[in-house]
Length: 140
Image (cartoon, rainbow, N blue to C red):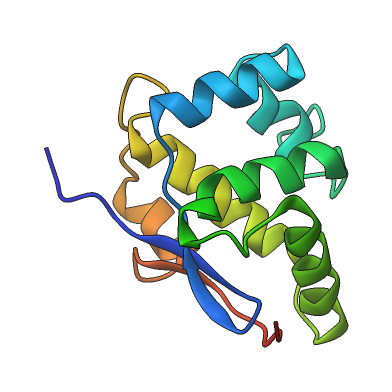
């Protein structure tokens, strides 16, 4: 098994590393009444019939999944703060789908789904250097 890659986003003026556990998975699934992978596919980064991301999704789920991945960063990381940071991210020229992609990749590579998804070489090129980063400056 290869070393787990790090996926992160610059939110609130800090690099926030996404970390997901089975406990987080259980909490999210209970909160939304759907499996974690279904939430990723239908609400975090939904695709059309051709597999092209639609840019839609449910903001409440998107914020909750981001929060679940970065809340280990301290008590200041609340759902409300994540909402604020996403607004700031967009205001500073960021594209939120970049953060959603980092979130999804972190979930799939974390083991929280019961397996570890490993990107092939082509996917790594599409995602960057393998150390995922979504960057746009935001402040706290």
